[in-house]
Image (cartoon, rainbow, N blue to C red; front, side):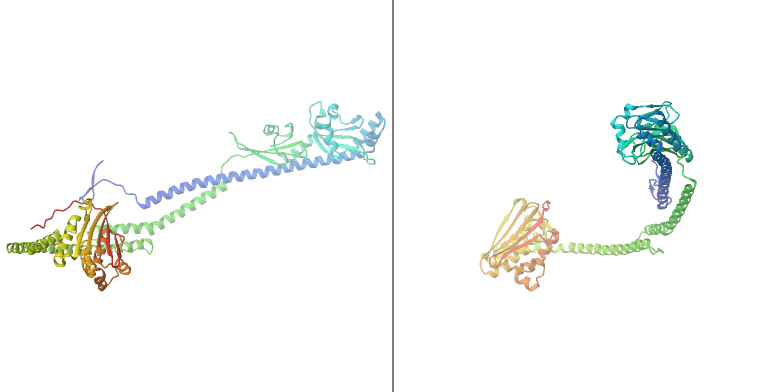
Length: 597
């Protein structure tokens, strides 16, 4: 990695290539455009494919409906012919004759032919009497399976129709062309019109040429008709391989075929009332988008690009350019070496709001810097005053030492002890101006203070100390206990007019140093305690109940501990008062006393 120097030649820095917001925006827009284009083209292809598929389905269903309708129409015409045959007088004579002779058979055959002269594609007609005698027409030779016809499963469906027509292929296997041609059979049971007794069974066999004619009429080479067992009957024979005998009836089934060639769809329909199946093949030349779709897609893409270009231009003019101006103004302010407000014309939008907010911050920071400078000057002046005031304690210590020596020489031992105690008190009291001192030194201040007070009040004051050894070197705010002890004397014990106890105790409790000051003086009322804790006591009430230093001491310890719950007051009027502090532990080494001069 190499180092390069900036244009001003004043600083060396690692090379860093910035990427502008506009460039990032173009990357995002182009990426979005590519994704949109791919998604759009894919959607058009899918929609085109689905539209083509729907069109092919509709076309196939229309073709199937037309073919099925023509087949039913043709079959219905042959059903009408079958009724004419059953009503023919010569056929009726054949069926009701007690003895059948060749003449009756020929007459019946001629009667049938008279009816069939008006029809086409008729293959043959078979009429079976109840006694097994039958006659037939047609030039082809047939194989008749009489054993099958005697079976219940063969003739029962015909009898169930009670003279109605039922459609079979090859008479349900009972009649077969010797040359293998397939026939469509219309079977009916014949009943006497007078007695309504069954006289025989009529089988009309129709040639599959009828189906060829129907296929040819459609002019569709992708059409195939076969029997429900898969036997080819008419149309495109290659489609037989796509037939499945399990296909549902009366439902058009569509299958898409995907292979190396064009995509194909096979539609099949199995006629419920006939043993016939219709297959239709639809072939899609390609999956390409039609020209009209491609044109629409191109126009939409161009429109999208134009819209994006206008959007980018607008964003660049309304956002990027003002941001660049704002950055330049900030750089000029930074180079000036002082926090100055930006002077630029910003648009009345978020950029303008940003400029106004920046200028407001600059005003605030400049004001803050000014106040900090003034505070620093004040601190320096205070430090100078403290240095000046340090001269006074030395003069006081030396003066007290001289007076105590004179008292000692004069034999005034009480005066000598009082002066020594006072000197120790001031030495601990001043303690180099420190704000925090150890528990040991604070207790010494209290002891010296109470020793001086005992010289004045005598045996009315009795002090006790319960100081845990592991709390001696912990740091606490200086002069935390002396104001409270003073309150115990002047507002607790002295108003009671009898000997009183002042007890100072310390202990560790979890993560806290617990300090308490107890006296068995006159106590405080609950209202006075509540006002003292809330800082609402007036000067007169403080003087009467709790002394001048209580409020200040409570405020100091709350500030020191950063907690309103650091102080508790317990009291019972005429019995006692206990003030307790809970101070977070601060394990700091004890400072040496420097005020020994």
